[in-house]
Amino acid sequence: MKKSREYRIVRIRIKRTKRVPAFLTALTKNNIVLRHLITTENEVSFHTTRKNLRIIRKLRYQYGITFRIESLDDDHVLRKEWIVYAGLLILFAIPFFFSQWIWQVSVENATPEQTDELFETLHEMHLAGPFLKRDKPDDTIIRQNILTKHRDLSWVHIHRRGSRIIFEPLAAPIIENEVINDPIKGNLIAKKNGVVTHFNLSKGERVVEENDAVKNGQLLVTGILKRGEKDIIYGAEGEVYADYWIESEFSLPKEITYQTMGEKTYHFRWANEKKTEKEWKVANLPKWFSMIGEVYIQQELIKKKVTIDEKSVEDFVIPLLHQKYLEKLPRKTVVKQEKLLNVTIDNDTVKGKVLFLVNENIAIKQAINQGD
Amino acid sequence: MSKRLFQVMPLVEIENFQHMRIRGDLLLETIADNHMIFIHEDYRIKIEADSFHVKLLRDELLALDMENLKKIELTRIED
Image (cartoon, rainbow over all chains, first blue to last red; front, side, top):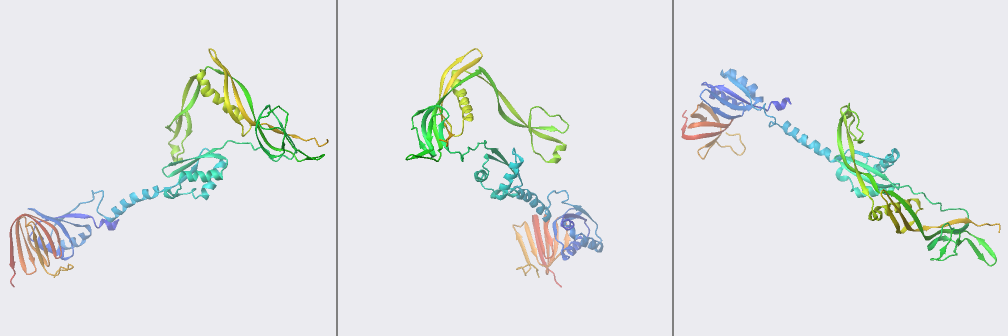
């Protein structure tokens, strides 16, 4: 800094005497550069750099000159000095350089186990720590990689806010695995009445054919192979699908009110202020900020009111019942058709009957009595 | 002799009778509002104008702006 100060420009104002030209010549002979030399009635003034002042003062005594020094660029914010230029360059370069990186990676709305596992995967993908924004693969690729490694997730939201990246995993619905390796050897019998549509067998011999109507408890696939007079028990295994109808009754209030999610809004609260009931979530902010206050997110809830008529029964009551039955029934079950049998609308309630044509695996295993 | 690179000979340049550059050994003899006298090599140069603005003065170089130049007088200094 001291060195740069030496290069600041000063104006020197000399009272005009006969010795001034000789003094100026002496300055030039001492390798001092004079700029903007102006003469007026009483004085001669010129600009030079501060580093020359020592020689100028020395010569001044020799020539008996009196002068005043004025600093010219002390008021300037941006002086013509290398340090100023370097400072400016750093001022712009540092934020630019740091903005090229993702500094913070976080996982939100996940269990601690999920967070740990996700971080492990992100670490393998070199996406856990600070990394260059341009090195970040496309969101689709990241999501694909995460989903292939984490089968328990159905989706991952990836939000990028400035130098921060947030992963928000969504867990997949839990599906109970069916027991495939049942050691008991047996026949497959029907657990419901229905019309057989197709077979999916790995072992066994069909007793009924497709499009046959079967009754509850009827033998569908046998696990006994007859060879001559000898019976070989090897067990039947697989699925037998059949169509059957489910009758469903419903009764609903005529007017339904429900709430849906609206806009998210951000609000600021001082540290000593009380919490509001409408608060949904507190935004993550640096710790020092919590001394001052916090920012919370308010989730708007929109109340909606629906009056049910015959059309709205078809529009959304049936799909809701459809969904309800699908959840109850085993996996691979398909609801093929819905039929609205009747609807009665009273003053305040709506009643009705719906038939669902369901296609489901109706085969269950029945152990073969080997004592025979 | 001039110390400037490629400029070893004394030189006096006048541009549009408003700007003047003198290169070479230089001594300031008089400096006033309306006239200036230099000793340049073996010559005395006297310039008269309404006003002067010396843009740069250093060893062996003078760059001068003149307003309304009236007279330039060049006299050889005899021993």
